[in-house]
Amino acid sequence: MSEEAEKIKKFVAFKKKLEKRVEGLESELNELRLMLEAVNSILLEKGFKRAEIAKTPVTAEVSPVKEEVLVQPPQPSAEYENVIPLKTVTGESLATLHINQDSLRIVLAEDKNFNINTPPFTQFLVERVLAKMQEKDSELARTGQLTTDKIFSYNIVQEGDEIHEIVVKNFDANRLRELKSSIRWTLEKMYEKTKG
Image (cartoon, helix red, strand yellow):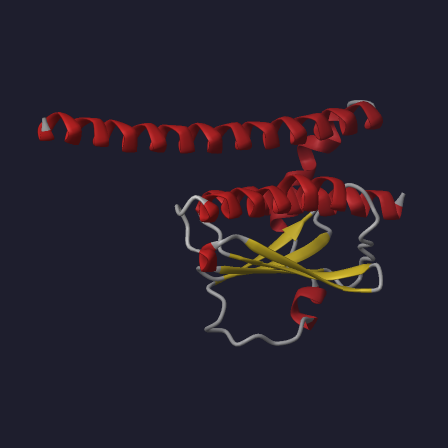
């Protein structure tokens, strides 16, 4: 009987792992679908200028780090393990990600005016990405699967309606990947709206 109970316990743990993995993949798939929709609409808007689109990623990789990254207030180097610039496909600086194992600081480019009311910031990034991650962790904490100090949290630092930075705590590698792509996509859409 105890051997049977042990087998069942292992199957339950395995089932939970599978459910978590499926949930992660579904989340990633939804995000990819949203990005694909955005790319399709841009292609339609631009009239399928394939030659220009094919050239731009190369220039984005080669272009040097913009000045505004260096102008940010100095941070203790030990505090952040990674510093990653976020750029548009044409190489325009959008933000800088300062990452350590349990916190992420997204410092928005000072030469851009990122307004909290510009779509898709609130509708997509806050409501569909950040708030959903926080809700999921709150639910896990409520059922005892996560301690309250490990709940995903975020803080938007703004002056009036202008966003300066976003601070995120308690995330894993999968969430970091999702956050990077969602933030970059959101900021690029916002930037396109402000310059157009």
